[in-house]
Length: 378
Image (cartoon, rainbow, N blue to C red; front, side, top):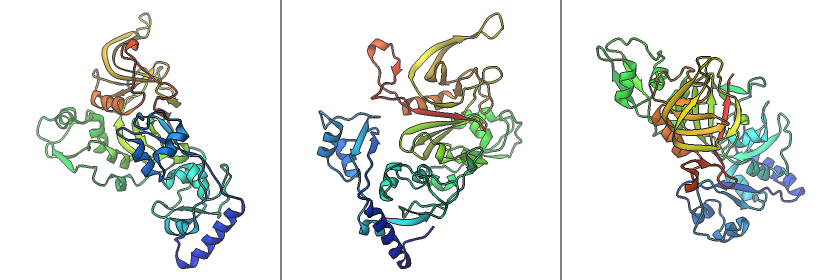
């Protein structure tokens, strides 16, 4: 990686000149509306106007946009002016395993923006040693991906937690259990066990000092030996959920940024959790669940299961009150969460609108699509 010191300005100008010979590159860019956002705020963020956004998106009322709505930001973005390149961008040397998609995620910009900056009209193959323009502040050293598993050494997540983690500890008293301490601090017992390298039902010695997970539990990512390659992220801009069956953890992302971590229980035995990429297609705040076969001894009927979100057929995220063994496979294929975690995820994920005629069911639609879900194991 090279910074734009005086010795490299000439090279940058040469790169810009080469780009310019092919004409102004353009690529459309989208924005997904977040809670509380207004059209004027979105226009200001992207350096455009309300009138432009209204025309591009055929909006009848500029005072109304909804959470999850996809807005086209522009019809094409020219290569930046030379002065802007020098001020905002630096040269990056392509490393083995790099792709435009992966580099866009690592540098905190959209794929279309990265293509536009570098004069690409389509997602092209890169060659090792090729030099690209990337933002100044967000250009980390390249991390070659494992070509077999698509997993990399753990990301420096603690650096992403500034101002988030609470430095809470608990000193174990005689007779206390891990589950009881988790209830006292209102945290997932599986998360408490994971953070302190314990089993869920470990016997605790009096005087042992335990770290208490923060509200978002991002520090749990410190203990992961590998993490998902950004090239495999299903989106760089949307909200999405990663479920790592090997780690028995789920991670809620906003674009490339993890915002909350959950210790879960997935399918066990003959009822494994399905893997793949899906979207939440329907959700409901509470329902009874039943299934299995009485003849084979697999029948079940669980009442008042809360915050249910189906992502494929009858596979769902949902709250769980009948066990606290999170971090171990326990379910018949669904993703078990604590009731508190399930409620948070339910409120955070799409879809969120429903029709009174649907009896409380919230179905995804083309204009209100469900949140992406990526489920994998190593």
